[in-house]
Length: 199
Image (cartoon, rainbow, N blue to C red; front, side, top):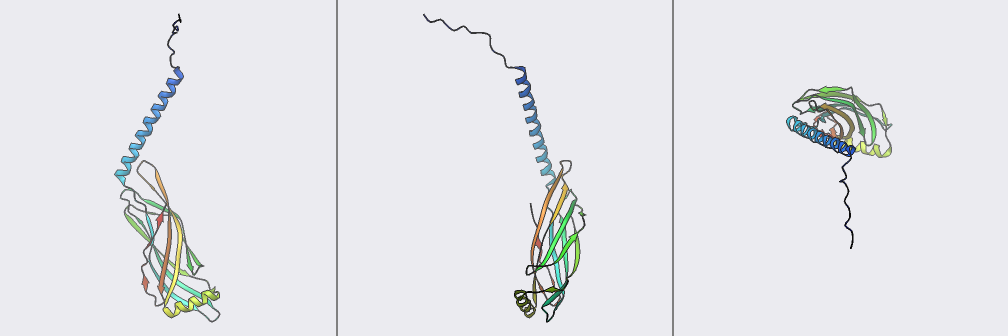
């Protein structure tokens, strides 16, 4: 006859394992509660990404001589908007490059500034380029632009934004502008309304 196995005392779970499981459970509860608080705060405040865009632009003067050297003067209005109802927004590291057929004309820079909740700020830049020697391709394009009375410019660059969501912390975004502007030589104001994208 086979002997039945003798059962010993039941093995108890180690106290250290119980402590570890308890700590993990507490941490999981804290994470869930924090997530709920953040979600409720987001619904209450409804944060919106600020905007930076080219509101208006004007070509004030064009000088193009027989030596194929171009000089221009422009006025550009850049607008910063904050549609958040409950948060001020800070803009910093704002740097925009003005180009003409790939040639860099000027750098538009703004000191750090703040836009109050649900308001906007507008900045005017008067850009006077240094004399720009043009290559053959740019010479041809410039002559065509003079005949049409319409000059193409390209404004691109970035700005950094930061704002607080109540006591939940701050949110940061990079704003990017890529704006093609066709400006008439008769000094008419153009409203490109090129808005920024963000990430």
